[in-house]
Image (tube, rainbow, N blue to C red; front, side, top):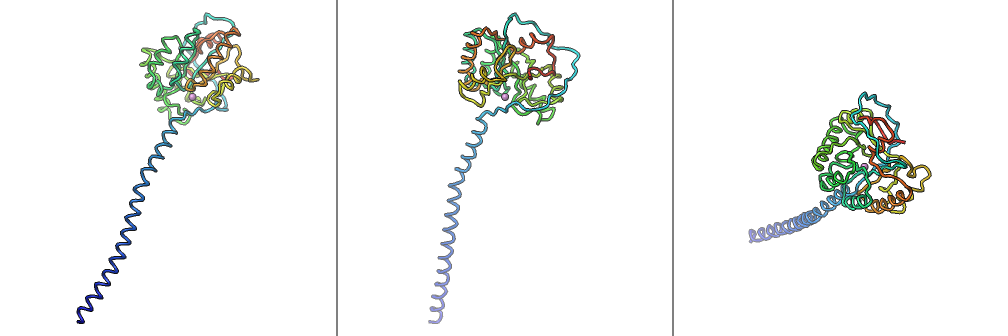
Length: 291
Ligand code: NI
């Protein structure tokens, strides 16, 4: 009898412990299931953020910086030719493309028999090689805006060389032989060292005198107002106008801008043609278009 009673007590103890363990195991199981369910959502949201960060093009406004002192260049690689046009000249330039709206812009330019200059990103050239081919075939000038739009002053010399070389290679390949001689550093940031690297590559640095701020004002009327009504920066004879052909609003604004300038007897030239009307020679490593 004694043994039976002892056995019952033991069973009760064990059963009590087992029940506690079952509850503990159940809680652990629920926690594990909960974490497993939440994890993919966290990954997805991270991926979305990453895509959004890549998809939104960032354009840095021109830097307020000291102008680098002039580098002495003995020989001009680019001999300039006087443009056949006279009167009031303007050079329209487009950065950060090509993009989905560039062909529409090329249509508008072709309809009016107008030349422009495209400072293309090497990475975008790889996405739209046919558009870049068409730029060259239509008689537009193609300059470099680097491969990946990184701030050149934050890169090593070798990285800067690579940004320049990779872009020139893809432009050459897409166009069947165009070798760019103009470069517009992203955001307008450069240094004497970057000028020297550009000189080695046979390239001149080109900036702008009119910023329509189309990268900020995605609105046709706001862009036109900057181009024509701005007290300090409106388009005038000899202006180099910076815009970005990656925005639909820019293409809409440019079409109207061109028609207004044509009515005002402007002739449209490429940057090289405009500089040729102002300088005897265009020197590699030299900086043009800063006002
Ligand atoms: Ni840019």
